Image (cartoon, rainbow, N blue to C red):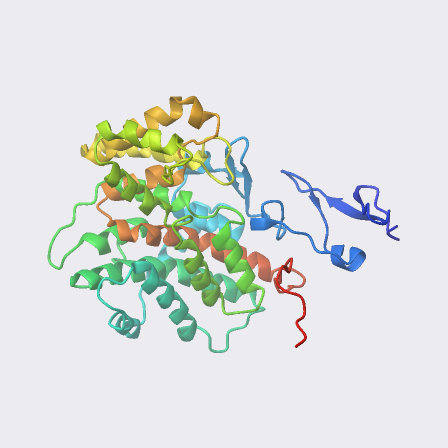
Length: 428
């Protein structure tokens, strides 16, 4: 019997010997309670096994809350649908970092500071030449962010909250510049520097599209669409890349090294590369007339084909971000007159999936990747840049998570255990 008894607890009985152990139940403000098994090994001499951490809370957090059954997503108590309708991306960035929405004066000061921090050390441009032609932008971006740690490390105090915020704002400000600069470099186009007269999201599109001594036409709906895509990717609780950032952060590594590691995790086609995979699959389907054939393949258990852009590890209902993006996609089509074959294929695919019992019973609703890729494609952003856009949007969430980790009373290095199934000791 465990010596410590808890009134609000779970009791585990080991049927091999009858021993019982009590573990406290901890309640959050919302969502499932958790069983604190911090002393599980100490008390029982055993480990727990949880593949993919599907039932494990790896931290306490006040940043983002998801209710997958209801299809809800909130940042510091604000519903994502309300934020998308009433606020801009930088409002959410400010909210994640400062734990409150900005006033008009705070927003303007924040925007101005980010714009002035958006320029990069020109020496970093030489890094681009070290990569082979047609290198994936994610590989370059990951290297660039790791390189920033070399430029911003001298005399840095990892215990100064003021420096945390400075590092966060610098990262958010420079990420779009690095992304746009490499895109221009890869195409052989002249570099376009940030324009201090433009807004944050507008500036990225400007750096991507503009040429010297020429006017670039940026429609308000285009800026709004990209701004919303960034906002809807700003944070998403303890996903694979965020967990990576926190894991590396637990070693007391430089914050930009942590973000670089997060970029590597997000690059995977099952995570940040998913919207790129959606577009490639729509291109593979080819025409609306081919959709039925691929629907049949998706239902065939013996066929390895799987529909991309439907279903989510967490959401068992309609992804709330997908609802916002579908409305924006339709608005974008209406205002700038997009009528592409990809959109027609996507519409036919979505129509079938939302009304087919096979998919509905399996909670395979459209997710954020389904429409975000179509929106980015409509904005003229190359498919290989999709994951980079995801990184731009997610950077403030990663930094907020890193700051929250650093604000804990103590940091314990992340060190999971294993169930060893290899050979026993071999004595020759």
